[in-house]
Length: 132
Image 1 (cartoon, helix red, strand yellow):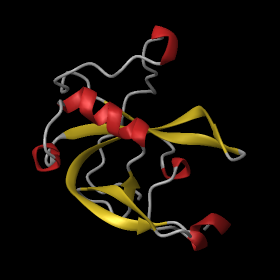
Image 2 (image 1 turned 45 degrees about the vertical axis):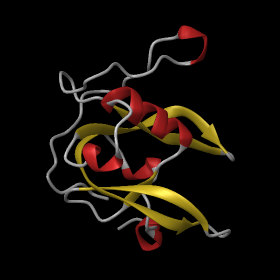
Image 3 (image 1 turned 180 degrees about the vertical axis):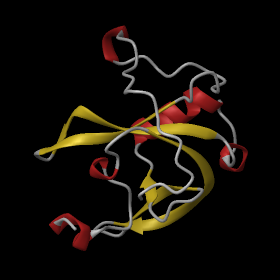
């Protein structure tokens, strides 16, 4: 067991994703997150315990993948979560990214600023019980 295993949080972190993982959306909830208890949208996935705090960037990607639909219409849809090591936030390296399952998205992922194509990590693992 690693030291970090003793400090598991309630939400998915980049370090929870040693490889890309294909997941299916189970539900969305609005929860109080962080020390400021800010109300944020959180996505939960089948087989997982932790939720993903949906950032504005995640929201744009979800909308690009599934369209401008009600949250309930996204439940049951599949996507890939992966750790993008190019993200640096508050001194930490790595960030959780969302992308389409190959051949499974309705829309293309959004381009990055400057028109650069979206980043794609390696192919996802099929895991009915993700580590998170």
